Image (cartoon, rainbow over all chains, first blue to last red; front, side, top):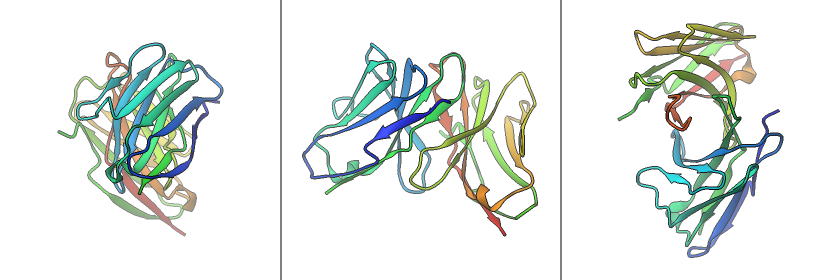
Length: 115
Length: 113
């Protein structure tokens, strides 16, 4: 149980375009999902906390107008990278917390390359 | 300010021996701790957790020890297997903070056959 999927697994886009990444909890309902970013050989950096039916909470230094998060249902959160630039190239990972449990379950990640 | 620290970026052990991965934290509000395993280009996989009311939790080959006074936790893997080779992250959370997790920088474990 507690499976989280992400789509797409990798995407290449041109500078200035927008990219949407989906995160789904497949076998449980997640009122809270999290979006992380990982740079090579570095730890996971929390970008934002996504709450179903309300606005996301962004971490300090993360531009909310650039990284749009929508959590429209209990099983789906989306991250849209708007007007992508090469410096946005990274590995984006989502996670979902099982209600009543401490642990978060992670999706497989999305490799974004902006050319 | 790193609230969760993994001071060893890498560790190599022989197959069959014990692997000990360490983690230190500074925030006394943290009351639950987790270990994750991560392969390249994949999301982390949850391994084991411990709450602050315990000092030990065991699950198969994995045991996590928590020393609250020292603000230190460790993950023991015994016996180590080549398939355990991965990056291990410790994470900590505080019950009253939207259940967010703060991650350490990770330790690359290599189990040599």
